[in-house]
Image 1 (cartoon, rainbow, N blue to C red):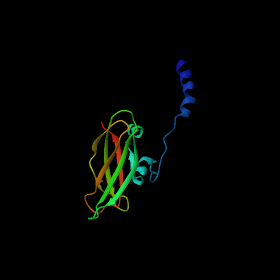
Image 2: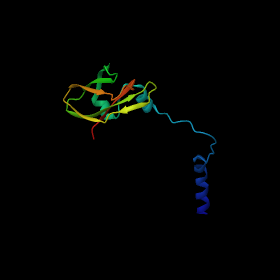
Image 3: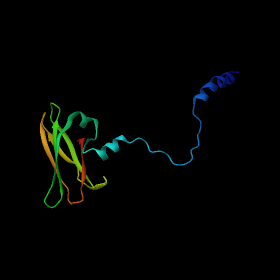
Image 4: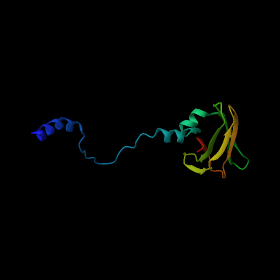
Length: 137
């Protein structure tokens, strides 16, 4: 008797559980706004801590005489404390594909300080770039 009552009580709950669905064909890609931003923006912050602490006041782009790309980012510490960040640059071709990625560099920014961070591509293939900032770990 108790087993029957228990089974009857579970029956409505089982209706709420999704069943197995079959899927034919390809799947649509998941929304990837973070990746899209990194492919289109010239400056991105990679984590919440960097987003809260750092901003970019300006970017300066220059072609050197040997046709290499030089980029300088003017970074501002928005905090009233000294912070440590890591910055790198991904140089890209005209279609947005990476041709060179610099290693992350550690920087210390004093309270409310500004500092320029310079990157130079090692070849003349770079047409675009993305500067990426994250908190140091």
